[in-house]
Image (cartoon, rainbow, N blue to C red; front, side, top):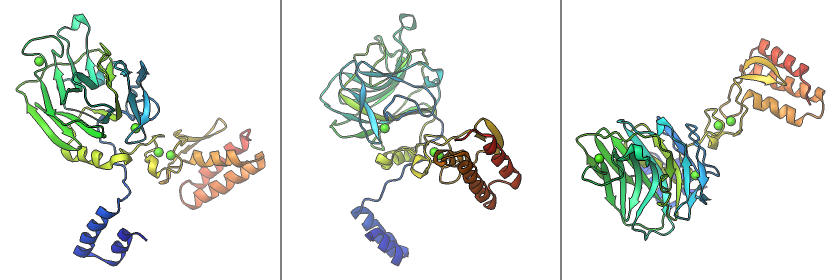
Length: 352
Ligand SMILES: [Ca+2]
Ligand SMILES: [Ca+2]
Ligand SMILES: [Ca+2]
Ligand SMILES: [Ca+2]
């Protein structure tokens, strides 16, 4: 029995609180994932592909970008200066004049650079778009910067004036970076803590039709750096400080993922790749019975699929389905009529 459990069992009130705090410090509790924040537009976990698991803004790895061990599962890995994850333009990746949050875990393989190095950037280099609107979360030497500007390129006093920046001592450890625009104020968070903010009198229109670069500048593809970027997300909302700290504190547990989109997070889902048809369909026969999800993350269709997978012959399949539907009727999940419909579909099906 762990110390934490013992104190929790025998003590209460202040004594419990104090001892629980001590045991927390002594025994690292298992970290649990945090629910993903609302209003997320895109989320690139970097877990073996460049897919956006929230909004479908899928990217592709180019010029040698690959994967490595990340904070939460795998991360994107950039080695050469041209490595990039490129995401096709989508209007919902523009920031308009609204609030926005961009955050990710990142690690430098070698932090001794002095040039500009991109975490995420949407920047038009089309000459017809001069002076080049766009936004970027990037490093410029030891300055972490977030810029949303109608003149991200070019020269002059108005170039890149809508920004916030923080000077940070770089190292080779993993750090969480969050860039927020909240009304007229731009903020930077490092490891869950606000490190810089700047309030401007106006906003500039930085919208464009350029692709998004993760780890590099799409237009020039020369602003990469040996680094890892993990769990990058883009939201059209300003996360509050507590939400950013929660993501940081979740550490390797990360934001809860739901691979099969059945509403049950992966870490509580006994069937992580559920069949999520709206109704129970057996061998092409639609029973019209709602394909309900149980709290353990398994759908009715998953459980029928178990009968398909284990039956040696049609008789065994029917017997398995009968047993299952009996149980579901007993538990009030389906009605007697629905039991009949499912069994009838099973009987007609050419299974196995
Ligand atoms: Ca990841
Ligand atoms: Ca400007
Ligand atoms: Ca799930
Ligand atoms: Ca599931």
